[in-house]
Length: 215
Image (cartoon, rainbow, N blue to C red; front, side, top):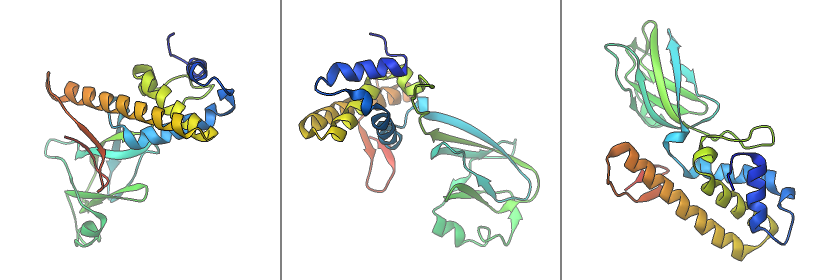
C-alpha cells in the first residue's frame, strides 16, 4: 500500500492497532511524533535556507520553523562564515555589547534571534542554512519531505505515540525501538550520501551537551 496522504497514514496505523479505533488518537499522535522527530532527525530533507539584508542592525529574526544552525555566512566576495559563540562569550566582547561597528565576524543564537558582532558598518547580505521543523501532516496537508521519502519512520513514530496514549507499555516499547532503528538507518544513509560512497557511520543522536552527532 502506498503511503502518500494523511488517510494513508491513518490506514497504516489502523493495520497495526486492532483493539481500538486509532482515528480518535491520530492527530495528537502525529503532533507528538513530529515533535519527537524534530528533536531526533537531522537529515537533508529538513535543510532550509534564509537570506538576510542588514544595514546597521545586529539582530536578525530566526525563521519560525528554525531548529538548529548548519552554517551562517556573509554572502559577498570578501565575506565568509561567521564564528558561533555561546551567549556568554558573545556578550563578553566589546563588539557583542555594541561598542564597535565593522564587518561582523561572530554570532550567537538567543531567544528567537541571531545576534551578530560587530554591528554592520553598512549594507551586508547574509545566508543562514539551518534545519527546519517538519511541516505537520494534517487532513489539509497530506505530506512533507520526510513522510514522502521515509514513510516507514513516520508510521513507527506515530504508532509509538498511539500506544503511549492508550497506555500499552509493551507495544509502546516495541514500537519505540522500531522507530529508533529506522531513524538511525535514515541518519546513516543520509551521512553516506553527503560524504562519500561506502562510508559506514553510527548515529549518536542528540548527546548530553545538546549537539547532534554522527560518529
